[in-house]
Image 1 (spheres, one colour):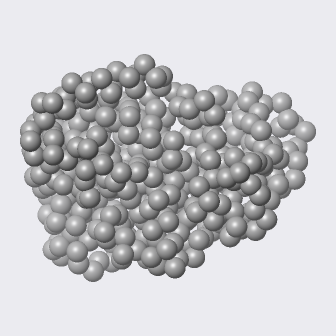
Image 2: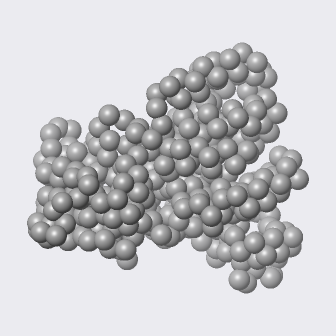
Length: 378
C-alpha cells in the first residue's frame, strides 16, 4: 500500500493530548501520516491508490497492550491471571512451530479488537516475530529471565531476536523481562544491548547503577519511581500516567481493560484513552506509532458509526472517546504502517486456511496436555 486517503471522517488526533476533528481527512503515504486536517482534503490528495469511505467513520489511534502472554491464549477461558508455572509446563509440551500458530490466532484476535502494538513476554519469541509480520501487528518482544523458565534458552532467544529482528525489521522491537528483582547482570545486559528491561512484579529494590538503563515496572509490588504498566488485578493501582496491559484474559481486548479503568477509578475518558494508546505505546518502545498526527507511522483504527450501534456521530471530544471506549463502536478497518490489516471482510494479511491449520493443530495437542494444564480448558 502506498497512498491512502480517508476523507469526510471524524478524527481523534493524538499528540501531547487528544483533540477532535468532527469532519476532516487523513492522508497516508508509505506507512506515514503525511497530511491531516479539518474540512475537505486538498485537491492534490484526491487521487490515492486507496480511498476509504469517511462519512460516518471515526478514525482513532490503535490500542496498545503493555503486557501480553500469547502461549496461554488457548487456555484463556480457564485462567484468571498469568501463571508462570503453567507457562513452563506448556513450553515443555508445545513445539516451536506451535508457537507460530498460537501467535497467528492470538494476534489476529488482538487486531480485530483494535490493538496495533503489543509487548509480548513469552517463550519462542522468534516465532512470535514471524507471526507478527505475517499478521501485521507491531510487537516488542521480551524473553523472560528469572521467571521459572530456562534462562539460558531465553538468553539464546534474546540473541536471536537481536541479530535477526531488532533494528532490522520495521515494527519489531526487542527488550527482556525479569521477575521480582533486577540484578547487576540485567543492568549490564540492558546497557550493552541498549534495550529496555520490563521488571515484572518487582519486589526488591534495584541496584544503584540503573542510570542510563530504561526500566519499566509491570505490576510492581513495591513503590517505584520507574514508569509503570498495570494489568489484571493490579489495575486497581492505575494512575493517569501509567500504561496498561492484557496479561491473559478471556477477551484479548485493551478496550475492555480501559473500561475497567473508567468505571473503577472514575477516570477522565481522555486520560483513560491516552493510557491505552499513546502512553503504553511509548512504554513498550513503539514511539514511532504512538501518536496520530502528521509524521506518525500508521497505527489507525476506523470505527463505523454510520448506523446502530455506532450512530449518532459524536459532536464533542468526550462523546467521541466514549463512543470508542464504552459504545463498542464496530471496527471496520485497521491500518498498521503500510498495510491494511483488517477491513470489512476480516483479516486481510493471513487467510482462513492458516487459521484452520492452527486450530486443527491444537485440537491434536489438547488431548496430550498434562492434566494440570488440560484442567484449565473449557
